[in-house]
Image 1 (cartoon, rainbow, N blue to C red):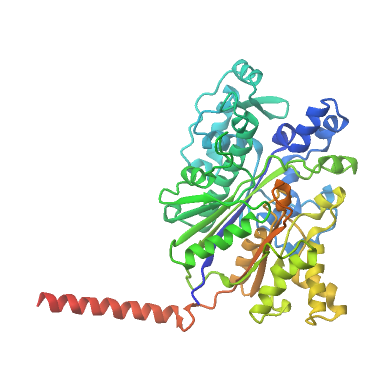
Image 2 (cartoon, rainbow, N blue to C red; image 1 turned 120 degrees about the vertical axis):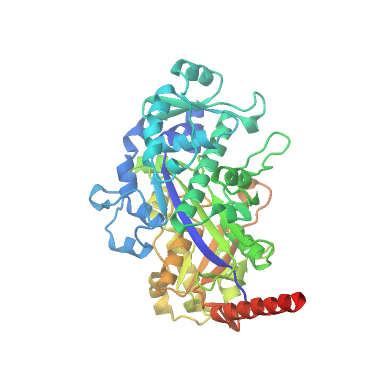
Length: 511
């Protein structure tokens, strides 16, 4: 069968302690209720420096400098000074960006002049642009900036401030005086999501030598929604991201399903390529401002750093089979249907064991499962436990129930077929997709054969339904065959024969 392939991927993080303080949902709701709340006064003492954010082992896994399995060899807590890694901000799969550079991107992706940067920041930003391998290649013109007194005036008129520490660096203006969907806070959220997605997409091209003008379609799958009072969530993030990244020949649309959105987008991308509607489809998502510091109160209470201090983003290119890159098995797709139910057993059965059974595959035949890969150091202090481990135990338990595992093998299965959580809790970001880049590398090295990517989502959060959601798919090492009975060399020979036949026909017509 002619399966689509994963031709490249990228993963980026942006350290945003100041956006966390100003825009994160926990911080904004606390401030609205009580501006003098004790938590707000303690935030600065629990925020990490950029170097510590970079050296944090899970972040290094996310950008591809170390594999998930290596996390098990590093002492915990990973955030402690003695367990930080000696490494840099650029990874095999992407990069970690500081907040000042990100403000440059915010200005770059703003096409309605809503982002205002100060004169001092704009002057200093030129050096930051020149020193960055991707920013330096982009046509970025910040202008001279505006005086601080102008920025303060905008803030008095409901603009969102942009700080670097205690220094005001700029602001984001509201796009409409009465439409709350275009308020300065919503514009902040949307521009942040857009800018971080552009960074991920540019890294995809940079790290994988991809020509973005060859992209046909973009599927954007973040948790934000852009629109106005008449079309809330109307979109289109995808095309706006493609415009900034240079995807001049692409169209696109937005996919939403809470945390399961990226998995749905990957299945949609595979379908577009397999059906030959498109040849190259990018799945991309930026980060979520609302999720910054979401569990901050619990982190402060437990005297640990506020670990949700960065945005996550990713981009994945799905293309027609090239006989080299890992294939997406479009015949092995798990679906949480309307009638499935929301019990953990029902959910995992629909997403894991049912599609595998249908294709005669044992749960042992999947080398690695990528579930909700939230970093447990973030979730455990907040009472949510170790989310990946809980999912792996449920998969193993179902294997025992179906007779594919002995009960005594349960934890061995968890350890060998699972992995530690390493993704930031940005909602959509952890849901299966963070491992795709690692899986592609491991498959190219012959260290991995099959992996299952599992995305799950909480649809009940929207107050429209009590239903849960989820979708899964399997990626597999490429066999080198374009079709079942045709390898690459066979295809090349057929193409040569066809070309020769055309030449003969043309000569006969000429004669």
